[in-house]
Image (tube, rainbow, N blue to C red):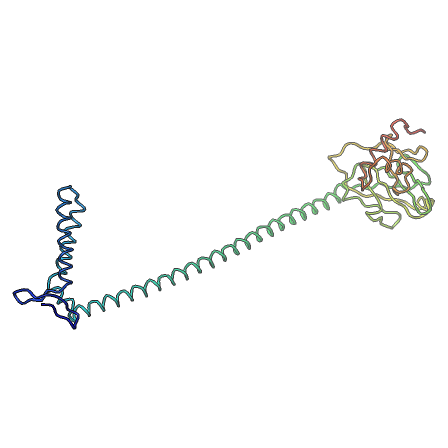
Length: 303
């Protein structure tokens, strides 16, 4: 007999127990898995056989009237509710874990950034230390230089009224005079100090080439001989090549037959020829000196 008007639709067995369509469907599925288990057993499919047996037990258990009745009880409802709450709790825990993971990643990123900043600061400290060491080394060199100046320094004195092989005054024009001074030794450039009378000559007013000083004198040439000249310096022990004689030939001063450029380079008569031989642009003093040597190669100085 079929019953309707509620959740149960089925037939009644002769014994009086209702048999709904769900029970019939579950029983049929269970029988299908019984056939599958038998087939798997004959084919020696161990996994298929085991899986089929488990499926048979599951569906047949669900098909039993007592199981169906239990699923409709308050106990089963409470169990399902507990499972749902458990799922909600697990979801909440997973969310919390994800938040903690994100927070840990942010903290790790912050630590890496701080470490990078520390590495940068440490690098700057290393560079600063290197600079301090370099400055300390320079100060040490200066101390040695000062000590050498007082212990090994020499002074060349000049007091004369005319040109000699040690000092030549060459006037190019009003207020433009080149003074060539031959020192007894090749000096350490940083130790050279030139005094005319009591007046110190600034370093930008003279140039040094070996043991030859070329001084640019802005006063009349005749005034230069009126006072004594003192040149103090520390000899450079690593330099042995020294000019032995200065002499003037025509409009050029020679140091051991090597032509010397004018102190006021723009007044040098060979400069236009040198500039015409180039393509323009700035040039180094050494280039002009080499050009002078070539220019005067066939014109040795005359007495």
